[in-house]
Image (cartoon, rainbow, N blue to C red; front, side):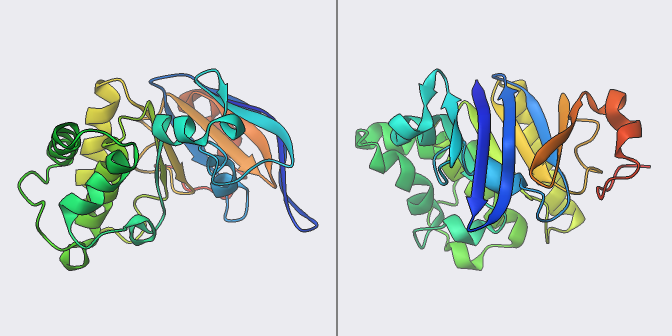
Length: 233
């Protein structure tokens, strides 16, 4: 479980998160929505210690993130808005292997994790391809594979559909459905709910750094009418 307890975060004098409390159970498909600048990305970057709160704390699987960053970053996989921000190697296989290598795992275990992660995103056998020659949808899937190779309990994706064409979006969504069916918790950060509204167990909306909506999508749909988010017709 990811537990956010009274978290406040400031950038200089600007308050990005204002006393946010939120619990995300294992296996839940959560959509975190809101306008640009609402605090969505700032919030999820606290889940694995990329940011530290000015007040409050985040606890993952019973351990405070600040006390064990390795555990948090193993339990919470993060896929950034632009997957190129997370690539650290030239080839697909080397990039996916980077995280497990830093855990100090045996080579055989690393290779097995890479193979399993690439199979999960439909990229088996493409370990030697250069990342910079992949399409946008393929890069997104490589980024997901890199997170999956860490065997996270939760996978967080920040605006994963930005810039993807329809076939690429459908491919990524299919992989997320598979992960959810396998018990991995999924958190999708977006302002466009059309692809994920009917998939989500729960929808949380941030506005000005505060939680303004929290509940099953069908139950909170009416509350979205005046908010800057896109809902399906």
